[in-house]
Structures are given as structure tokens and as C-alpha cells.
Length: 213
Image 1 (cartoon, rainbow, N blue to C red):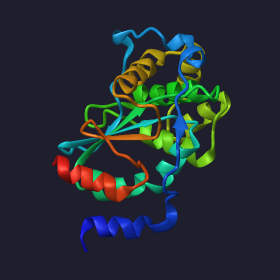
Image 2: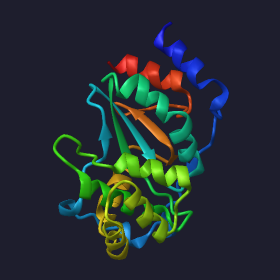
Image 3: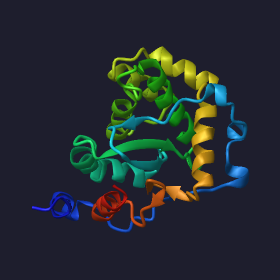
């Protein structure tokens, strides 16, 4: 069976086609603490895989559509594109300040990344932590610290980052890249810089990857 046909069967009706996603609200609703970017305090974007084609996903931890993407789309991308080495999957933070937790959650996840990164795994336990947050609907500061312990990271690492806004420059840099790329909502999927029309259409993502290869 052709891989694209397999993907369509795998996902089937589990996807909610045409989800509008979370729309970016700029201007006064954008947190002031993210206005200044300090390159010396930036972390690299968390990545999985080492393929020649880059699939970059702009996401907000509090966006319901991002949760749907993580549950319905990401597992198939992981098994069919990331693990076989066809793509490099990159998470990019694009917090939309509709919910107060958007920026703190991204900050907490980057604290876990920073604490656990190695030469072999530059994303560290970022993606494992993200999975725990999504699966348990964790949002409060206490929840975020508990989730860190769930992936083997001292809860104080996250608590300290939340108190100090440690990785806000990293989040701001991601957000700035997204704005420069024309991202207006989440989730947004870019394949080698080309935006996929429907981030929930796996066949479209795969076709765009194949075209870029």
C-alpha cells in the first residue's frame, strides 16, 4: 500500500477536518514581557528526527486544536515520517494570549528541555513533558511542576523558571519567527517553509514532504 493511502486509513475519521485552530491576537493582548528578545538566552527549537525535509509546527500549549493535532496527527507523523528518517520535526512556540497559561506553559516546557538536553538528544525530555501536559490537561503552576517530576525532572526546575520567566526570550524569539513567516494561528504546519493549507490533512502534509524531498 502506498504510504499516503496507509496514512489516510490510519487516521481515517479520527481527524476533525478543517478545524479553524486558535487565531493570533496581537497588539495590546500580547504579553509585554515578550517584547524584547535577548539572543543570549534563547534555546534552540526542540526537534525530532534528522530527515532532510523540515516540518515545523507552530503551537500554543493551551490551544484546543493543538491538542487535537497532538492526539490525531502527530502519532502518524512520528511513526511514518520521523522515525523512518524522512523529516526533521520542529516544535516552535507561538503562544496566543487568550489563556493566561499559554506563556507559562511554554516556559515550563523549555525549562525541561534545558535541564535534560544532551548532545545526542538536544530536545531532552521536552516532547515527553509536552505529552504529559496534554494527556492530563495540566495548566496550573503546581500541575506544571508535577509534570516535570513525572518525566524525571526535579519539580524545582520548573518552579524556578515559572517564577523568573527564564525562557521568555526563547518564546519571544519563536513567536517573532512565526510572525515573520506569516503565521496567524495555531497549529500551523510549514514544510521547508511552505505552509500546509490544512494542518489536519495528513495526506497534504505527506505530499508536501514528498514534493520537497
